Image (cartoon, rainbow, N blue to C red; front, side):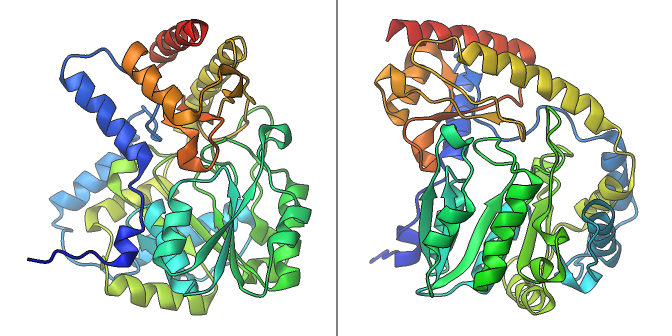
Amino acid sequence: MDYSISSRAASLAPSLTLAISAKAKELRAAGEDVIGFGAGEPDFDTPQHIKDAAAQALADGFTKYTPSSGIPELRQAVADKFHQDYSVEYEPSQVIVNCGGKHSCFNAIYATCEAGDEVIIPSPYWLSYPEMAKLAGANPVVIETTDASEFKVTPEQLREAITPKTKLFILNSPSNPTGSVYSKEEIRALGDVCVEHGVLIMSDDIYEKLVYDGAEFTSVTGFSEEHLAHTIIVHGLAKAYSMTGWRIGFLAAPKPIAQAINALQSHSTSNATSFAQKGAVAALTGPQTHLDEWLTEFNKRRSYAAERLNNMPGVSCVNSRGAFYLFPNIEGTGLKSAAFCDRLLAHSKVAAVPGIAFGADNNFRISYATSMANIQNGMDRLDAFCKSL
């Protein structure tokens, strides 16, 4: 039997973040004392009122198909959220509910890009962006940044990267993997370049609520009707509500794009899970008080980890102001990221994600979405490891 694989599937690299998390769990199951810094998910539980809403939906028998684009009350809740938080107007018909923030990104890219198009992606990038572009037949065009600029792309870099083939620019603030947060002025300048050149923006806002040290999230949609018309917002509930396993994401887009995504989704996943959508309504419309507690705790962990990292030999770390990641530079250790993380796991039982997965081989990613006890223990092991090199 010839099990030939399509060129699209064969071109993809598996998700290294998921692989690292799986490896850490496998070692723990075998009795190893592994500290995991790989997972991009909060260690807090989903707030109780959200779980209660989903449980009630199950009890009520809300277990059937829904419209492929999502239940009406959830699409309205998303539109209301963008009106309240971004001061922009979306009709519910412009909102598509789907199976997680990753699904939102995939739908946005797949519905707008085709063979020969170019997708501009600042590096370091979330590792799935280039793979999604390739699946759509488009060519990823990577703009490199460094910790000297807090891993932010400049308007000049963006303008220089645009060609007649450019279809989409991916903007992610706060960022995975760096945690960088663009200022209002920086966001506007990047948006202005895209409007000037007729380039669509995919704004990945999933870490919107997770900011520290006085940083403020800014949406590119809020500057003008033109900025709004050039933007697809991709979002979800995984990070700010600890609903990673619920697989609920959403996007908002200009009507023609939303209609195309609805059609695409109707032939792929159909609807997101029915009772999880009821929980999502509760998440967006219910109490938001959990965020203050979570942000206080995340900030403590962030500050502690950044200070420890900056005192390790061969390591330097920008203390980023968003998400729940740090992206230390390890150039001073003499190791590239894969070798560093392989040896760190083998010798010190600390799991972290090599920066090569994000397009930055002199760095690695640490998630501080784990307990302070784990962070302290992990930093002790990491410090001893760096001193041994």
